[in-house]
Length: 51
Image 1 (cartoon, rainbow, N blue to C red):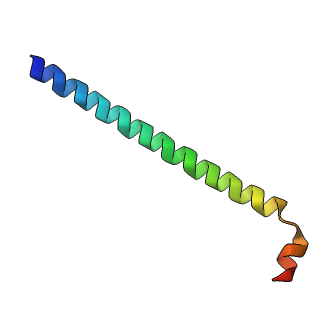
Image 2: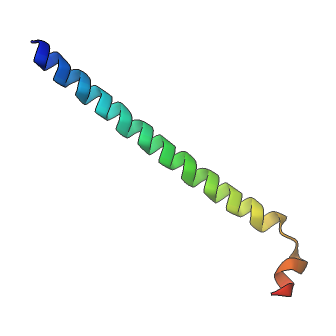
Image 3: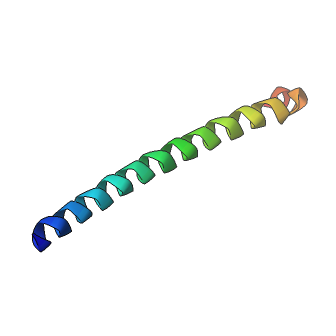
């Protein structure tokens, strides 16, 4: 019974870690997307004309 509960706990922790990793990935991608959009909006047009 103890081994079974330990396996169950480790399985639950693994699920939690997977969920946290997915949340972190979504947050990172969202922040990257928003920062890229903000940079596009904030960069003056003259800067793009210089290229």
